[in-house]
Length: 119
Image 1: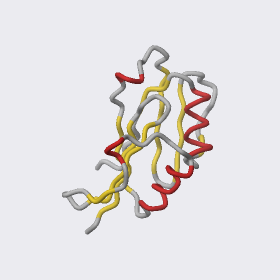
Image 2: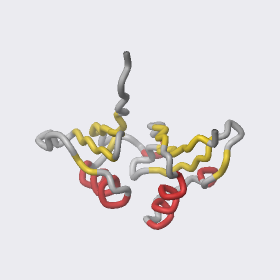
Image 3: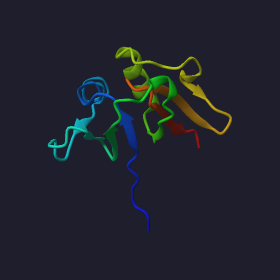
Image 4: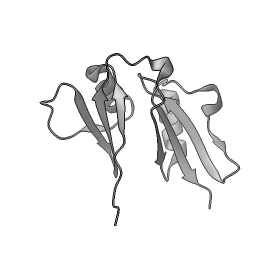
């Protein structure tokens, strides 16, 4: 039985990534902080892990994660309030597959799509 999935996304600078997820999105760091090239954050029932990849070109980063929520409007408002980067087609909308979704980009251009079921 599968019980969890914890995506690993690239980051160029641990301090910048940590600041974005903790201070802008309200995640908290967990686990050991002894590895300068690895970061783990969590919020509610999800975890996101990051590995250092200093050479990554954000314009060519295709890291993505889909995060399900039961309060999409709250997360969208947080994104607006924190002035995070929202792609042109990423603003809050109801998709044909009956998901209310929006997307944001983190400092390394990892795409975080938030979705709430309309069923």
